[in-house]
Length: 277
Image 1: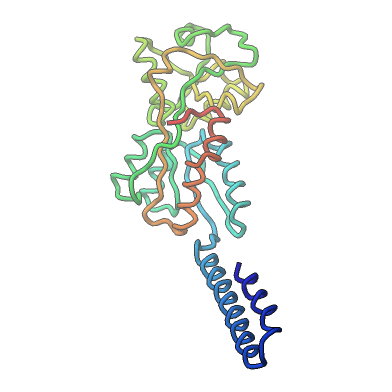
Image 2: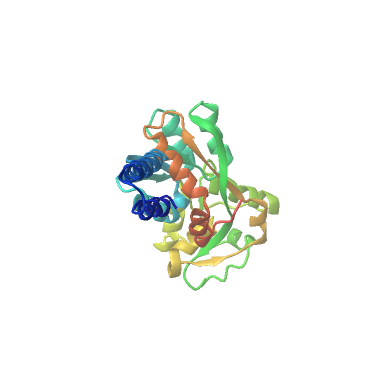
């Protein structure tokens, strides 16, 4: 609009005296100057609208988040060139202990509110953790389910080698809750420190079955066969995420958390088998 008005002034000045022409030229100059100033102002506003993110973001996350968070980490790095997302995947209780023990990290994503509370109670979280997904248990059996496992009760039968997560780990606590709700007792051949370790026992045929998360069964593909059981509905885990108080890279950490909670992040997570909160 500004350029059109200035061009009209230039056409009209040809019919005027030299003095009027000079005035028109001055008006044209002012018009151009004003337009340039507006452009500079817009550029300055755009450049200062948001800080450029850079540097490393360290995320401590529950082992069951490995596949989906790895994907989101790659997405984040593409969206913000100059950043690098590094992960520490392990049992939530182990991660919480590391954080309260002073391990440097920016973000903590836990597989249960109870393990998150270890961090918040110690004053190591910045703000209130937000639940971003939920997860449900499933039985992982050998490929093709050769032992014909069809229920949680079947795991209590003699002759089956069953693996559980340790009761201090969210997947182990959830499994015990499901067993208690069913009035069942199960003595596993081993307790594992995270859900991936429990699943690996079945993948390597060192166990006949394991109680893990649906997301882990899905990630394993044809290495295992999943069996649903109704009692799992009574032991669904909420997954909270938080910025850590002493985060070395606060801005980038906040941006990563926003990606996890965004529509794009939720598509990745639900595609991996997680449920929305």
